[in-house]
Length: 383
Ligand SMILES: NC(=O)c1ccc[n+]([C@@H]2O[C@H](COP(=O)([O-])OP(=O)(O)OC[C@H]3O[C@@H](n4cnc5c(N)ncnc54)[C@H](O)[C@@H]3O)[C@@H](O)[C@H]2O)c1
Image (tube, rainbow, N blue to C red; front, top):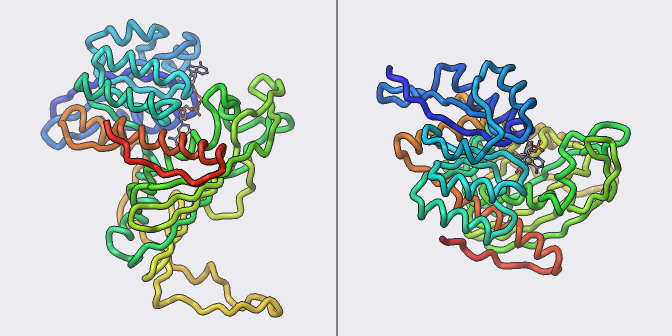
């Protein structure tokens, strides 16, 4: 085996996503397994160079994980010819500027979503990347979750017959930050800092719906800021200017209708933090992050509406668990592996900046629909 080193500048690794999912569970996990076997006698060895604004935080993080390279000078890192890939998990508002510089420097780029604050900015990034001829990828981690992989397997196997509708429920209670610390960063609740649940979650719903059921062709959304006052990381109160709940209806190519609630202001009475129920003529499924249950047409009970008597059936017990039949790796890591193979082996990869722009478009149109109180068509995005 020969070792092929890929040097990755990782910006935003002191953050929640950058640290846990991308550095620890993806890149360091790849190193712990001895690198990525490319299947051609070579092993890809990812070498992270930590990038950020605070030197002490970067140094502490590097030391904790036995890493030796970090920098607070993004321009110097981008000017370094030995760096192959630039990765971005910064706050959303800092993304376009950093990605634009990385593309101009000729680096391959891999980035968290949303890629930009609006469709025009997201498309511009995609165009710049194509013009420069670099490889580019955008995180679409939900596609690689065990529950959704099993759901996709059902779709591909024709389990549903004609798919009629998809109902998604995402959310949990995010503490206000006064009497218990908030479990998400405060910028998420300030529109002026790139926050808001539509901007955060609609990009996910776009690729989940698109890849499993069909492209979104129209959107109707209602949004709310249910909790208008929160407390930040320093314990200071601030006005929540961004939406913390969104109620969306999406028409899909092929005719199915999807309806997804996204909320940081609900308490969970579900098996998982996100669940999708898919109803088709031949059967239905409920998929979450890890699990997926089905009910076939042949095993569908015939409930009779009668409020005068207690429920006689345990409806949730009438579903069958879909077996794993495979080992599922962390979704972020699985997508990193495909991106790195795309970079070094030129394997096909379609979760790119154009796909990222579709997510930004759906968020933009969702917010516009809510502001104008009407259904909006979602035109197909092209470069
Ligand atoms: N794929 C997913 O499921 C998923 C989930 C959550 C967040 N995200 C995305 O990941 C990105 C990071 O989110 P997070 O929750 O990790 O945020 P976070 O606040 O925990 O981390 C943000 C990172 O950006 C850095 N940063 C750079 N410029 C900054 C600035 N001007 N102000 C503040 N911080 C700055 C911070 O130091 C930190 O490293 C966001 O774009 C978000 O949309 C993706």
